[in-house]
Image (cartoon, rainbow over all chains, first blue to last red):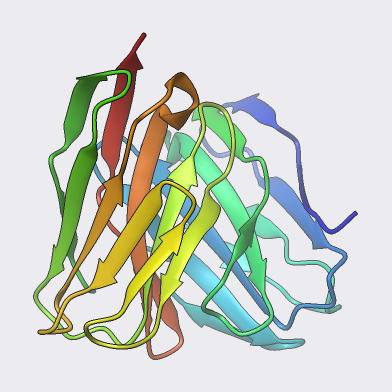
Length: 111
Length: 109
């Protein structure tokens, strides 16, 4: 079954404690992306990757890092999380950037 | 970044009613996409539009690519309870991807 898998689904952490949210897709897609969703703001793109070892900033990259060492994986790293990064995060992948397939989301709370 | 404004922000309708929502941008888009997000899940693509003026249907859903390329519209006919969710317009600009602010739909049985 074609899917985008994010882990964990829920995460509660404290300010400053590094964390990684994993994302994996099995569709051999080149384009992958991370979004955060906040009430009233829709989804905003954090980082995207056009292919292996090619990543670029989206609209809200501050406080986040990503890596794309393999085509299927695109982890999101928060080196020093802060409360304003409390949000719902989505990973997505696409063959052509336009039509994106989303994971089920990771709800992060930073205390 | 790009701003995609959707209206209305929320809608409460009776089952069986038709629904209209729209999305406007300050910039031109060459592709418009409409996604639906069910509670607790990620967005799922409903309709993709690639040409100005294009009208595309998917079952009870019909979307239009505005002539100015700065807007798009989504209509849902004869709403049913499973239409509940948040509807987003979206589109790419260069290699980035932008989503609208969303329209939350509640269908009252």
